[in-house]
Length: 168
Image (cartoon, rainbow, N blue to C red; front, side):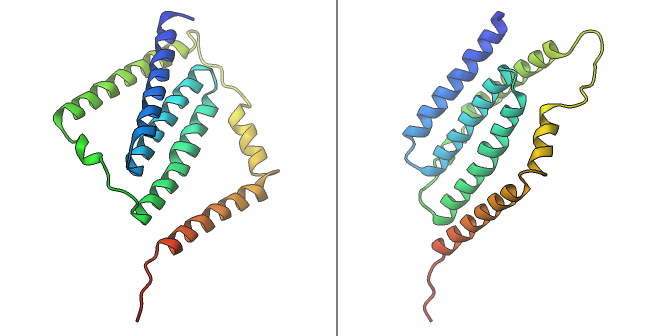
């Protein structure tokens, strides 16, 4: 492993650990959920470094995307806490976020450049994504649809629990 990949590993690990500590120490649930999303993105970066890009993408889509959106939706619906996001609107925070974003983008471009083959691209006939998609939409279609129904029932239940009682 060369120095650049070692740096990448430590960078994503440090981001994941720091974000996890910030997740645990937040008093308000909304900023805590946002820090947990940051942990999921850092773990996704580690999965991509381990040559498991499909697992990394699924990590972002399922955990950082779907589950955290439902969690934030329920927290906002129940109005459990005040947000601390207004504290992060200063110029220093924006510049810091911009610099971190540029650094991560530069790292991504270097990793992508190193992964491209030098002498032409040979397309793969069958990859992991097509195998998973084929089994998901054939063998496990009923389980997939039942899972979506369970999530829909959970959202409807959260709305019903959070609804204010109107007395006439």
